Image (cartoon, rainbow, N blue to C red; front, side):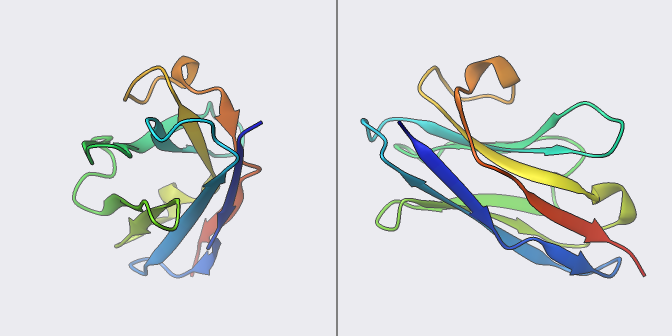
Length: 123
């Protein structure tokens, strides 16, 4: 059973930065995609960014493009989400997830999820 563990969340002021990490283990294949998603209170979970760990292709949601960057270190089996110029609307629980069904931000593609890490943007 694949396991994903997020870390790096916390409290940051508007305009600040955070880097989230997602360590993937116990995966039976090296060909998979990892996505970052977030869910704010009272809102649906939404896709933020995703990456194909084999070829490095990425996609960022329009709401974060230019501010967030997804990347991976295959040796460490870790996917990162660098978040810059954070604003209060970015406050949410951030989840990483793994997919063997392709690259994209549709939730239905992802079968394996981490437990989430809280990001709070507040002054």
